[in-house]
Length: 131
Image (cartoon, rainbow, N blue to C red; front, side):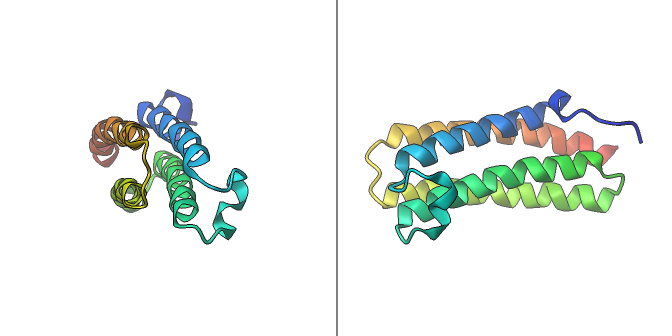
């Protein structure tokens, strides 16, 4: 199999953008400004911020796994897992709103990024499962 460059895969670029937005919003919303220690926090907002960050990173990993795999089964599993992660991040946005985040436009920004990623993801998934 030829060596692939993930930087040329449009959905990977969208995943990087989603991760950057997630990181910025997690930093903004969390009470604990040390993002590497969010998992230690008991505050719901920090727990949600940590989950968003973790899931955004998992998306990139799953795209890479699917892109470099010759197994249709592995590619399907990665695509399915990414689909679940997208739903989870949308749920986390709802969780932030229910936790009283006043800056709803920032949550909307993350939702827009998810929507943009999702449309790129659907195109990628279709081509991935055809190969």
